Amino acid sequence: MTIKEKLILNKLPRHIAIIMDGNGRWALQKGNSRIFGHKNGVNAVRNVVEACAELQIEYLTLYAFSTENWYRPKTEVNALMSLLISALNTEIKKLIKNNIRLLTIGNLEDLPQRVYKKLSEAIEITSKNTGLSLILALSYSARWEITNAAKKLAEDVINKKINIGNISDKEFENYLTTVNIPDPELLIRTSGEYRISNFLLWQIAYSELYFTKKLWPDFCKDDLYEAIYDYQQRERRFGKTSEQLKNQVNE
Ligand code: IPE
Ligand code: IPE
Ligand code: MG
Image (cartoon, helix red, strand yellow):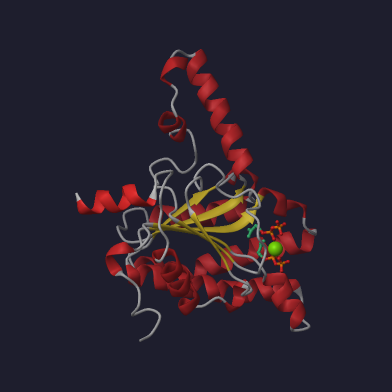
């Protein structure tokens, strides 16, 4: 039995989020430049997007560039921006063919104009697609997102659009960049680092975390199936007891 065949198809996560890490180390191990690693990282993205579309996963969020990544050497930042444009150019046909809708989260105003333009085009062209929603986190950090949400909420309070008494966690979510997107059930991080690096802090409150030592350019479809399989073996209790969950099933 292959790992894909082991998956329980009616128990798939609706939303998978991935911290794609390890491009630089992958390249250095091969005696190459970090940028070579990023280029090969694009192949892994292609495979994972394809696998999610095949499994009919609804949402895939990829952490592609963090707010903190702006502080990397200028040559690397520029190369990443160029890579994003060329990947969008080559992949757009496939997104359309596979009915994939492209979305972004992050402070897009910080992106160079040429990147912003290309992204906006791709988002517009795919906006009517009804299959997988592919969400690229670009110039994203969770603290930026939450702070921004607090500012917008404060404005609405001042303008009397909302009463303080009506602010709940559900209401707060309307101010996040992920409004209308369900929280990820599964968060994967590659490269053997056990940290979140400012990604989706609000949304992962109850996500199942999966860490693998694989470096991102080596991450393939089977690795994704492995992560989903692992997720499917877990008991998600949401604060309740195991016994309560079993009774719920039997009711
Ligand atoms: C992830 O790989 C890609 C981005 C953060 C843009 P890294 O570039 O962080 O690779 P390592 O962690 O240095 O190996
Ligand atoms: C997290 O990776 C950001 C992305 C994958 C885009 P980093 O490589 O930037 O994270 P740290 O610095 O090791 O925590
Ligand atoms: Mg890294």
